Image (cartoon, rainbow, N blue to C red; front, side, top):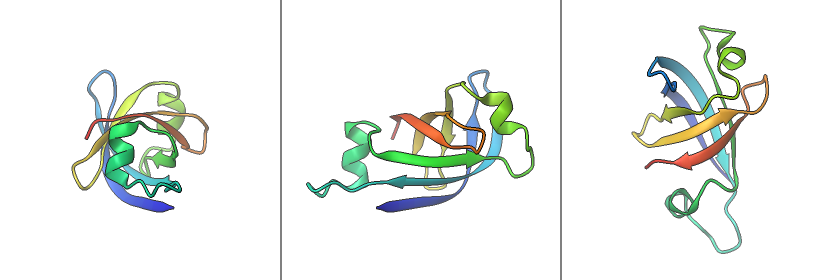
Length: 95
């Protein structure tokens, strides 16, 4: 299990940029795939949370919308919220 944690920027479908915090986890399978291998091969095995510390309605307002998260290290992914706790489903790694 590898974890990514930090602050980032979410861009909504309408182009609004929102400062957020995130925690992402991915399972390393028996084949020993690295994060980069999993990023190019799809989003399977990923879980995590994305939330806005300064806006408690962020998750509810944007629930069901596909948004883009820019991580601290410059990588990006598309996700949707799947619960009110900020849990996400990663739909695509953009690199």
